[in-house]
Image (cartoon, rainbow, N blue to C red; front, side, top):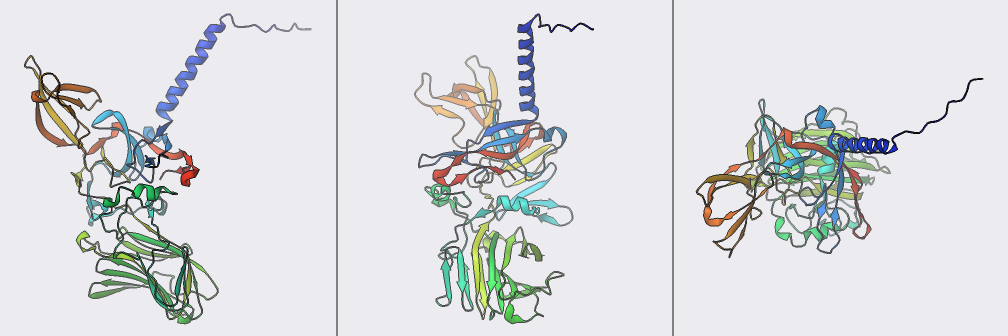
Length: 467
């Protein structure tokens, strides 16, 4: 019978432990550097997509996000991804923004939209997928914000009940939809964000979406959804039970004094709303296209002519029933992000290997629209001169401290994040340089998942995918 081998212990257990710890550290470091890393969102530049909310009530909301670093080791970033990168004007800091401009493109902001010059058609808005658009739209407070006819219409929460023909208009108390600072914030954060920011609602927004469930009555001839955008009207008319079966849905575009009728897309001819049935309706005027969807199917989808912002003095939605009534359940209105263009830069010719980044909180974001490189020529006491360069945004950098011995002192953080101290009288201000672009090598990863926080007191729960 063969003898059993004795189990032997390592002669050097301390070395085995050190090796195990070392390997674990290496794996963790490699995982963090190449695969996945967690970040805390410290500012509100990407709100409400990513929250870095310093609440005036003392209840703060700072998202924790997981960032995928692996993907960008095998492919380049893509338009609209939310990316983490080293701030070009202070590489000691990480920023997180949405990527809009791609290498080699010519990009500009006009009328709240981001446009890209295309060889075949000139300036145009890149079309976003439904999933991406869903994540970028900002929900508006629409309950109680509809102007209703004096007779035959009532509001019950987010429902509108019509027993006779008539028209409801949104918004109720203003002639146009504005880009309110608190739009789109989750839970109870919207009113908190709006406090002290009332002057931020400065632009008229025409890119709108309406969603509702429609239940027509038997005497309803048509249900109509109309977008107001400056002098124009885009009206979807859907035949109701009293219209018969030979009336197709129609999109009518009123261009001021003239009219242009757009035929329905193929397959829409047989669509007639039936009494006793309810239909999920989605209509939108976004990115120079208008679209009608019924029960998830696209019925009409048509391009429209871009409108200049100076024409947009009246924007909103009219909801109408012809002759008979209908019930509109859970009426929801949302708007697109309005990209402001009153910062230093609003048009770029992007070099190869570089990108343009914009924050979703366009009213309060340090991004490609205002990045400039502040430059000082500093003369030392021995007469030697040097040039320091860094972030030149507002009062952030440099900081000046008066009353020091020898004159006021300047504290200036350069592009590497290092602090430079010099006398104000020894510094000559040089012409700032535009620094709107993020080089490819500074991009570290893309945000994929918000994992925290949960704030029941604000009705805010932040577990969500980042799109």
